[in-house]
Structures are given as structure tokens and as C-alpha cells.
Length: 252
Image 1 (cartoon, rainbow, N blue to C red):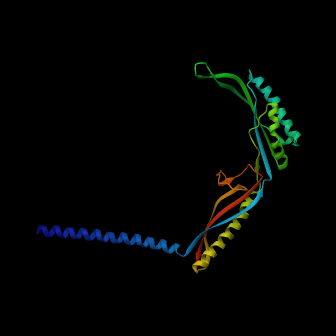
Image 2: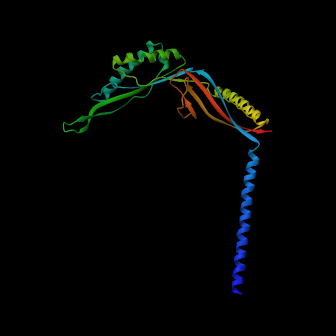
Image 3: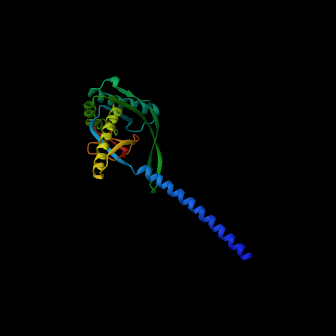
């Protein structure tokens, strides 16, 4: 009698587990079928558009630092003023107006060098003070900026080295982007139709669309990332603007 009770209990537990398994399986299959039905009648394509563009604005920020250390902070600022006048004169001689030249705040700091103590060890040694100041030029005269950049080597002869180069920018980026999105959308629709012809179906309504990264590239192309959401070449005047969109279409 006890063995029969155990058998009945075992069968009941087994049946319960089996029933739960059927419920779970049915749920999983139902979800999968729903997902399949929601995607089987659509296609996702990418559209590309690009166009050549040209910089219409240049920004050149030069961070001037005194060429050597001075014994005191006032002397460092005096040297900075002398060298800044030379730098300003350089830009004036290249056709820039005084109003186009903006100067930042002056600053100074202690200057140290590593000096060999004669025993094979370097000791950080105080050498004096240096002073710094930024000079910024914003101009729409690209040719004038370009000419000054080519002649910057002439400042080396006067003890002033410029490490920074101009940035060549495009002012109407949003307008360019919207135009490219429209063209990329047309390109995506054209691609979708090509796929549809091969598959013997028709392209239906647009279900969803998303914009990919927006690129401002060198004429030869680049994959460099930037904070703009793709790439933004600022080193050259002639560029390529490119945008990619991803669109999901219903198929009929």
C-alpha cells in the first residue's frame, strides 16, 4: 500500500513538471513566432550620400611661450610682450587687421630642467620663469590664413616657434547634413527596390529610420573619430561630407 502511494505521488509530480514544461515551451514558441511575424515582411537597408565641400572659416590659435627662462616674473612678462609684438606684426604684414587679432590672458610659471649631477642622476633644477599668452585669429579669408601658415617658418628666425596650425571649418554643417540625409534616404529606397526586384516583392511603407554618423573627411577619406559623432577633418580646406542612414521598409 505504501509503495502504491509513493508511485501515485511520483506520477503526480511528473505530470505537473511535464505540464509546466508544455506551458513554458508554448510561451517561448509563441514569442518566437510573434517576433518572426513582425520582421519577416520587412527589409533593412543602408543609404549613403556624400558631397565635396570647402571650408569657409578658419580659426588659428597660437599659444605663445617665451623662448627662454627669465630671472623674475616681471622680466618674463617683458620678454613675452616683446615677442607678442613680433607675432602681431607678422599677422598684420599678412593683411590682418588689429581688430581681427584677439589676445588671451597672460600667465607665468616656474621653469625647471633636469640637470645631470655628474653621478649619473638627473636633478630637477629651477631655471627661472616663463610666460605664456594665446593669440587667436578667426577669419573667412581662407587664402590669407593659408599664406600666413606657409610663412610661419619665418618667425623661427626671430626666436618664435609656432607649433599650432590653423583649423579650417565649415559654418553651415547643419544645412549640409539635412541635405545629405534627404539624398541618403533616396539612396536607401533605391537599394531597397533593387533587393525587392531580386526577391520578387515590392517595397512598402517606411517603418523606421535612423541616422548614422556624420562625417567631414579629407578628400582622400578618413576613419578618425571625433566628438561630432563621426569624423571632422579640420586640417584641410577641401573636404568630403558623408552621412549614412539605416531604414526599415515593409515588403509587399
